[in-house]
Image 1: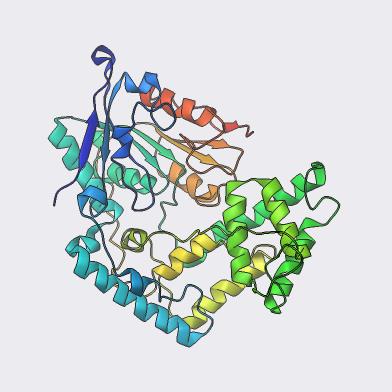
Image 2: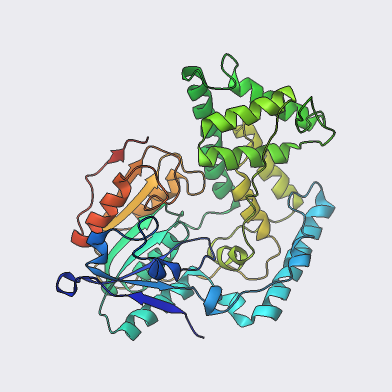
Length: 420
């Protein structure tokens, strides 16, 4: 197996602290750009990091220049995304298995070894090839699971571990994964209602936002919700599943003005709605289905899962992204990789940063991640942002990460940064 690696050396050798590896998440995103664009003013690193660290980017096994993961895209398009009955559920499982077989045929045996544990071992091979005794690591989103596994396998070889927008390290089953994610979307509807009550620019000003959303779901259930048009409703129906997907996508970006305008258009039938495609790429299945155990027994268990989520979250029903991932693992033949034991060795202080209202990596999972480590520290940003180091309006989380990477000093316990 070959792993593609890129390196940008520290700009000030006299101040050099070592190497900084990172992973951009996905799962399944390329990491080479982290080194290629290390000096970019928008997506690169700040000067106080560039001067002290060699930036090491790498494509995880099977991804990008480390394997070119491929599957049968035509077969993938046939997989039911929201099965409506037992027959469709079983068809989905069968097609998912066929899809996995196509990935294995086109990509090779690496398909069964793309989990976070395997990637963590690759990272240590990179460390050895670089001739370094220790590494510092910055993981984003799914990359936080890779960092956690490195800490479990090679604690003595870890100088610093910064985890940005953390995944749940406790290997949640389908129920808890959907519960945490759906609660975050439901909270987002409440935040939208609170914003509309205070901001005159809200397109739903004067209306009960939560009642509007409940009404939209009721109309969708009855087959009476249609996409809006210039002069009134079109003939194209909007399903309740589409509505849940809309709320997950738009509340996760947190542009309340646009979200309210589009909900208003759906409610009145006049205007235009832009649907975001939140469907994840195929590569994530080969990764997440081996890290988390999302397997459901049968259609009855899936139906119960949906009913519980809908009952607990009447204004959003469920987190569409979370359900995509759960259903994508049904029938996937690779069982979750056994959890490695914690190796002996003293870990450094570990910094976890997470947005309070993040829909992709909800705060409960980040709390569990920080609690994994003897010296784990969680800093929270009061926002919905995902990936706080670069794609965030507030500079405070990035400053905390930079300070930690240089000095190993973490923010005070209970730190909450104000959002914008």
